[in-house]
Amino acid sequence: MRYYEIVITPVPDAEGNTPPALIYSTMNGVFENSGALRVDLDIYQSPFHQPTQSGALKIYGVDFFDLSQATNLNPDYSQNPPTLASIQISVGMSTGLPFANASQKGLIINGSILQAFGNWQGNLVTLDLIVTSATFNPNINVNLSWNWAKQYQTMENAIRTTLGNAYPTIPIASPEGSLNPNLVSTELQAGKYDGLYQFSDYVNKQSQQIINQPDYFGVFISPSPLGFVLADGTVPPEKTTVINYTDIIGNLTWIDLYTIQAKLVMRSDLNIGDNITFPLTSPVVNVAASTYPQLRNNISFQGTFNIQQIHHLGSSRQASGNDWVTVVNAVFLNV
Image (tube, rainbow, N blue to C red):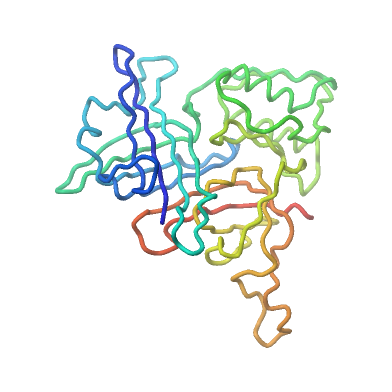
């Protein structure tokens, strides 16, 4: 069974009181809301230096009160910075189907609502949300002061200091030592950046100039449900996730130099910067039937890949397995 659970905390009212949370989930979830029996979602997770579109979520069959003026889900721009309604989205598969893996379900967004609008047409009531995977609006300018000391400080330490000053309530999910230790400045560098997109673009390009190698894709900063993710592909993460044969939908595909795209059954246990491997056998047949039979199940996607982008895409009531998927773009590391 397809699993989803959505928890929305509206913006506080004029007296500072926060209305009760709105909860929509599958019937077998911890919370039950039999009115919202279908959700459509289109959510990206990508580094800030390669921004993608904001996430979109449509919930069908919501209660009329959830669309009323009393439920304020749009940002309160009278505050500086604007106050945003928070949203947590969990997806995956529940137990039931033979190949469903309930251990892969969980939180994919612990973020905010950028825009909300409802629709009531005939007997169809929907709530549409534009969401971001961060607990802040990344489009709002923030003072990011950068001070990278000459030779005595690694880039990772300088990034952690800058993010900690600008976003003191948001943790950094990556452990210490997640970036290449050779990223040390040869001169004092100082600057001011107006937002994460600009700052992330700077650190990515600067790191590539220091480690000038064709297979090095640079430092990236990415949002995740646990906070900021820092990685550059040179320091192995704590674990490497093995993608099972039964997790793969369709073909594994090369989309760029050293870069593959894999469509998987929707899951939450993958984040940008994680390493993944594929099984030696695959639903893809890469050689003609007339060639050596022992080679027919060997795939050209052997080795370790580092995830660069994640796209969760689904419609919970569509029957096809292609309608509840997680698409990952990953770079081959063994070059």
